[in-house]
Length: 250
Image (cartoon, rainbow, N blue to C red; front, side):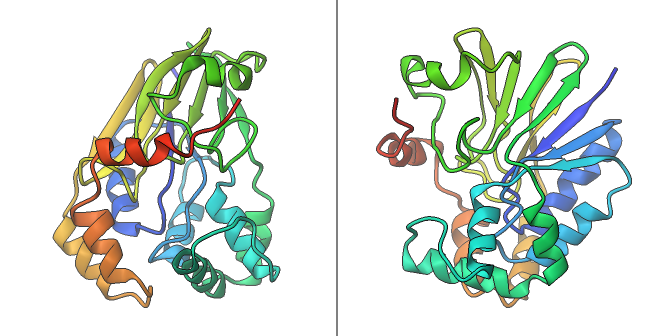
């Protein structure tokens, strides 16, 4: 039996990642797929270092966070972003070395992995065609069919919207792994375990200690991150309303 853990949207939250990795260690995981948006966030370099030092095989894909940070390093903007977000992207870019940038630039946008019991599984960040497209468990199937019908895979794993789900789009099972570092809904860390079943996981950890560590960084909005993303994240209902106006179009 092969077991694969999918970790998405870590966003530089090293304490959350450490808690998840502790559970992964006890779950006899054979491989990890890191599904993008390792950064931006409060502890970007420390988080990358922890992932690069893992003793089991890890495959990475780019999320919109990596694309935006790489663009900032090149002196341009990848997306039209609000000014506060632009500042976070620039700060994150300033923390990275040339070697970090080289490695991140080499990550693909998607990964296909043969997993016994599932067949071929496609891992993407937003949608299979674009790392920055949004959809949720409520997005009508008719809107999504064109994105998933010709992939020739049994399962697609995505992230980006920080909310877990497990749904069908036509004949394709589409699973959102949720967010390790910035989940919407319950405080904690969300991730996915594949093999032999699909298991949407939620990991609780010491939020007070994590808040102390994040406040001790030089991340400009550290206090806001602690308040809004760590201790009291927005509810799923709130965020479903937010994303309903920005969903992928046919």
